[in-house]
Length: 180
Image (tube, rainbow, N blue to C red; front, side, top):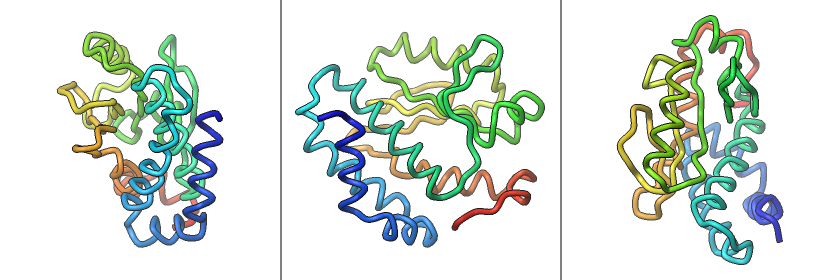
């Protein structure tokens, strides 16, 4: 069974209508926690590097949540020579107006030095540390907002609520039609 199969089975079990309701009520963190937890029980069957599989799961779940919430985003893009996992709202805004954009990096390692190098690359395209978001396996200090996948400090659950809050204060959000 692949990670995406595990994720979509958990989403199906939770039900999209329930996810939309949670997002609309500002309770996406509960939906994310439940879906992620449900997937974790099956993730061991995938095998492989734990930080890598958890990071891939978090990335897939984030992509899904961005889509159902109709949050404008650009995925798997490049700005200059820097790879971007997710740019909200997009790389063009990031380039022209970094204060109006967030970049999200899904670190699929637990090596502090590698994560630091990832953040250093992101600094080249996003000078505002509060607009550099990194999803890591364990909580750690970084020159970015850190979302942890750790069971005891599962801050990743807040990522969609935080993106909604960020987007609602930006001029681009007025031009978009949100489902929520």
